[in-house]
Length: 184
Image 1 (cartoon, rainbow, N blue to C red):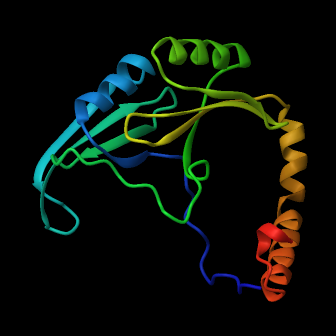
Image 2 (cartoon, helix red, strand yellow):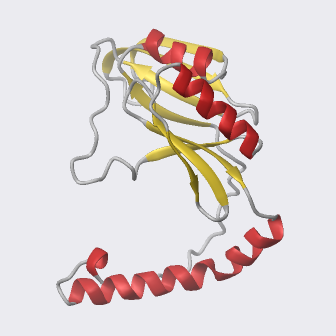
Image 3 (cartoon, one colour):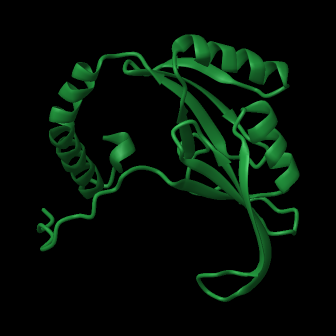
């Protein structure tokens, strides 16, 4: 078991932005602004990375979501997109964005499919319903909406640590037996 930290955690107030590499800023703008309806609200252009000073010309584009958070992209000017991780299935790494209702989810599915985007779902996860699709950069996106009450989610929260502890024990036993958690 991990020891407690000596200082309290700094409160995290929400997501400011999720940033990813894109192949082409205009192609990405078209997808996120014109198709998904997220307005382009900020552009940063520079030849040097502010945190490292490294020379790497880029444009950094930001699209705002209704809650005030952003999804952002870096176009490095070489027409390359980020490569998927070779040890991770394509369905694992994704960005889930919440919509208002099941009706909104269904409307999004119709709009995406009409634009030629392949959509998987609607998938019922018993607490949310979701659709899945890829952006032009190969990033898997999920549109999702809650389908249960806050009381139901609060009940899940009360059990979350015990469920994770049980998974961790099962995983350790499977690895010790040479099976791996997927086979346990």
